[in-house]
Length: 102
Image (cartoon, rainbow, N blue to C red):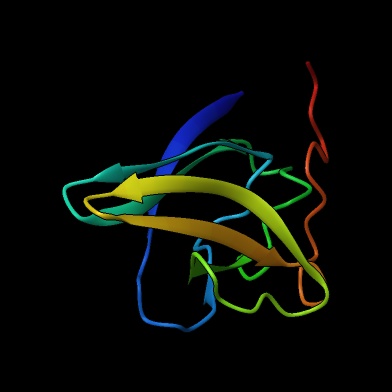
């Protein structure tokens, strides 16, 4: 069984490991002034993606330099700013759609 979880990605120019292992990121959006990612996760003990540091995310502003080895997850408008969420595929142990049973 899967559920959807919400994770806020701080606007602090740092990488943040998601506190759970996503099956699939389903949406990037804003709540108040925060950048938020919603992701599916398995709820079973035999979750193949349960390792907690498998999806490092970082928010970049428009015009920022994106390092090699990063993959775009989604973008969101917050007030006058457009923010772009990337994952570091070099450090990531997660592959989009991994374990997806749909």
